[in-house]
Amino acid sequence: MPAVKAVKPLDIFTREQWDMLTKVSGWRGMALIAHAWASVIIIAWGGAIVWQWNWIAGLIVAPIIIALLGGRQLGLAILMHDAAHGALHPKRKVNNFLGQWLAGDATGADLQSYRAYHLMHHRFTQQEEDPDLGLSAPFPTSRASLRRKIIRDLSGQTFFKQRSFQMSNGWRGLLAMRRNKRDKRGMSNKRDTSAGTVFNQQSRSGVAAPITTIDGAIATAKTMLRFLLIQAIILTLSLATVGWVPFLFWIIALATTFQLFLRIRNIAEHACAPVGSDDPFSHARTTRASLLARATVAPYYVNYHCEHHLFMGVPCYNLPRAHDIVRPHHNRMKIEENYASVMRIITQ
Image (tube, rainbow, N blue to C red):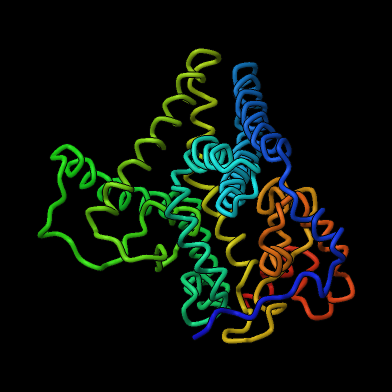
């Protein structure tokens, strides 16, 4: 099947508007990265101080701390996504460094493998070839099914399943790296996606080009080593300042609320959108986000997902402006008032 039909930007925007919308700032992406990590420090270390002051108060605020940290972790994943589009910084090397080391590695995602996979998703959005179709295909679903998914996320089961697979595949990669050669007998044309699919949980698809399983294992090993390095840095900073508690908040959030918010974000973007439609305005959903939603399931303008698919060269911080300019076309777009409304739609 051919790629999805693209919208011609100059049919909607003036040249001046389009140039303004697609201009990648040299500082705004870095400011968003700084905001995400500053928020992590304030939330995790602030929660630890409350815990040390009064452990009962610490227990009361702990769920709030873990929820907010899960939102910031999702925010880092979103910023890696922007880097995958080259929209985090105008210089490619800086863009890739920010997207990998200061964003993707915090949650264990690999920028390069995710980029290839994700651009394929844009090319075939909601078509049979879409590698993300498995995320939206199960919906609508029953409330009982959704409830089971939420329980798996908040109990850490989803996290354990994902990390176990990554760790086992990464161990194979470490062995291959140690031998400093490829195991020719283990090569195949299977697509190995474990290094890049943490961001798209439950995905059954992979990167754009077939690679050997050994190559995939080595990529996973490198991803996991960077992931563990970032965790070690956070742990070291935690121990050097106020003790274990900030790191415990961080890792618990990574295993629970991050997984849930990632799932909700995935659902909101494409669930119940028509499959096979040739209207690009129907492929993704924009959801209006409250302050609470922006702090949890919709950080850094990710809720403007229809606009992102229509104009994927627009940096995330310019998507609200794009949303306003395309207002005459809102009747063609899937726009929901809030995430609760989306959850009602997908459980009908």
